[in-house]
Image (cartoon, rainbow, N blue to C red; front, side, top):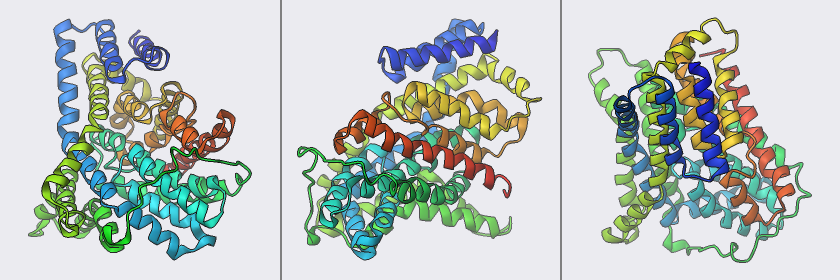
Length: 438
């Protein structure tokens, strides 16, 4: 009966979010209460579980996501994103413009939340398409494939970071494996796929085709822009690789671990960006602090949703459901990686939000990690790939793409939905292949 009540709870979550359009955080709390009560927990114990689950999840993530939002805002407002895009496009040339926007989307997408990256980069893509006279979908979709992959696969984005913490996965390895899988995924879902979609005509509305283009002397240099945007990845990557080779008694091992901690890496990156993208460009500290404050305001609801998902995870554990699911999976022949991907895919189709799909799937699949010995880092990416599957009319990203590119619903399904599904399928294929070697 325990599993049945969990399934009913997930259905209630679907109905509340997709049917009644209720806020995802409120929906999570209601489902937590339902699962706890039907699981035989005392009412006061349910409240304690919710508080503990939210506290444990957000206690780790608030610094990382908050500082990540600040860095993304600095990259956007300074013109670093514009500099990276325009320089890559001019360097690659018209014939290779797809590869230029793919690389720009990947670099800018790592520190930026998906929606921010979309709003910043799409007007620049419009300008590139108009200048080169290439079809807008041909230029734009590869860049969005990069943004989607970084959003679903790579820390410090919300869902991958939160699920990694939930599973006890190493952030550095998750990032490394995610980048390895991301490269072929982006190539297939971006340049290769969109070459078959040239016939889809996109004519952006004038109100969206009004980018704020900074002058050359108002932007940081290309090198500084790339360095500032990728500094978290550089610090975490150096730490992870170095720790793989140094002996246990290495004098500076603790220092390497400290610098590679995602929260410290993000803190260092923000402090560096305040100088490289702000003070050195002639901006004043009050202006920069106002910018980072606005960056934080955009992620408050994301944090609450992640906290609600963390609460549901804790209720599943405290009510005994996680242990029950773990026992059921002991004799299963289904690959836990495929199971995680399938669960995330189903929730994504029903709810729409990739973050909600990833976090909910993570809570359900958590006990499988310990009972099957599955690689936690690859489980994070498998769930991330599933959370991007089959984006359709209940996903905000679907409508963002449709309206900006001024497409019909049918055209959006044949472009955006196909691209997102390709990302999801390539992601799980990459996970299964990499699982053979790690």
